[in-house]
Structures are given as C-alpha cells and as structure tokens.
Image (cartoon, rainbow, N blue to C red; front, side):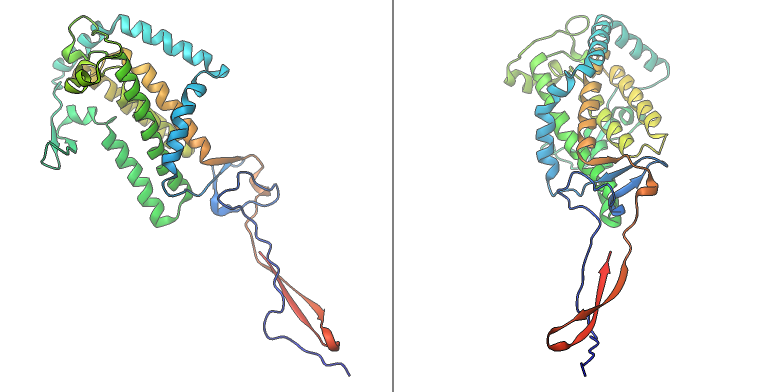
Length: 331
C-alpha cells in the first residue's frame, strides 16, 4: 500500500507578482500595481515612478540641455511667436509701465522697498525672509518660497510613502536647478539694467558684460529674464500637472505670480519685458520634469485591478510512490 503523505509545510510556491520595477517604463496591459497609481477621474490615472536618491540632479542636467530643443519644436512655434511679440511690445513700453506701477503703488501706500530679515545674522550666508506686504509679494517668486514648497512635499511623502508627492518634490528640485542655470546664463549674456539703476529709458542693454563688472554691480546687468517668474511658473506647472483634480491650483498660482510680477515693477527690480521668456522657460522645464516622472494610464479604471492572493491545492506525486499536496499561491 502506498503511503499517503500530507506535507505540513508548503511544498511548492508559485508567485505571480503583478507590478513593475522602478526601472520599468511601460505597463503590462493586464496588470498594473495600484501602489503607484493615482486616479484623476473615471477614465484617467497616472502611475508615478519611484524616485532615485539625487536623481533630480541628473534630471536637471537633461532638462538643461534639452530645453532649447523643446522650445523650438514645431508645435511650439506659435508660442514662440507670442513670446517674441509680447516681449517686443512690453520692452517698447517698459518705462511707462514701470512708472505707472510705481505711481499706483504710492497711491495705495504699497512700499517699493524690499524689507527683509536675515535669519542667519551674517552677511556671508544670508537667508532673508519678508517682513511686510511689499517684501512678501516680492518673495512669492523667490527661491526660498519654492524650496519651502518642495520641502513640504518631500516631508509629506516621507511620512506617507506617497509616490506622487515624492515625485513632485524631486521635480521641483530638478526644475529649480535647470531654470536657475538657464536664467543665470541669459542674464550674463544680455546685461539688462534693472529699473532701480536704469541710466536710460527702459534700461540699457550691455550684451556679454564682463563677469567681474557683473558680480560687482548685479542690478546693473541682471534684469532679463525674470528668474522669479521663471521659478514660480515652473512650480505652478509641476504642482498643477501632478494634481489636476484640484482646480484651484492654477488660478491661485497665476494670481500670486501676477502680484509678484507687479511688485517687482513697483520696487524697481524688473521690467514687464523681462517676464514672457522667464515664464516660458519655467513652463517648459516644469512640463519636462513632470512627464519624465510619471506615465499616463489610458485604459479605463475598470481594467485596473489590485493584486489579490489566490490559493490552489493540487496533488503531487513524489519518488518512491509517495504522494502529497502542493500549495500554489498567486498574488
């Protein structure tokens, strides 16, 4: 008589894991890991890739050298035309617009001073924070504000393991590096006087200024384009694209950008003509950063299923006439 052996442990396990590794770029059509999936509406969701430590630095380099190619794509020709035309018109009226902005500021008792407090207390390392409404409006587009937003998403993702928030934080860091690099290059190439130190109407342009002269008197050369609005636009683009279900993000961000843009004219930091190119750079970099960190799921959500464990027992015939049971687990 053959012996019948029932194994108390698991004789065999077969694992079918539904999901993707962090290096995977495409879904399998019949299996999507919902741990990385974020529903936007009934027919649209995004899968966010896990972030890599300091991956935002290498991505910033990619954004930097890909930006010119992105801007001159055929589908962007209309936008480039609008940027060029609006810049030309605004530069023509720059002095009148700044004068009007400053007159209105004095009328409503809005200071043109940038009153800040240095948190470090030393001139070698300044971390300035606004102290009144005037400086508060100016600091909407300052790097310290965007760093704060980035830190908020990073801290939230650290406590919740939220992949979308983690990618948003990484994309903001990536965008700040790429935008900052391009803005500084363009400022050093164009040498446009800020309104506060303009020697001619609309500010003099000193193309390819001496780097030493630039560093010794920055406001004399660094008006064009606006780094404040470029950084603010990048931040608005990244956050609004990652959280499109929150409809208030764009109106809120654009309103704050408008207030910041006005205040920079009121306090003599920028001309209106400095804005279009800066906004375009911020938007383009923001879009590149977001599209690199996620994948659109085009199939209906009804076809997206959460992995669930299933168990199946089946007989196993062993050597020497023994038989047993194998437990197969799929999840």
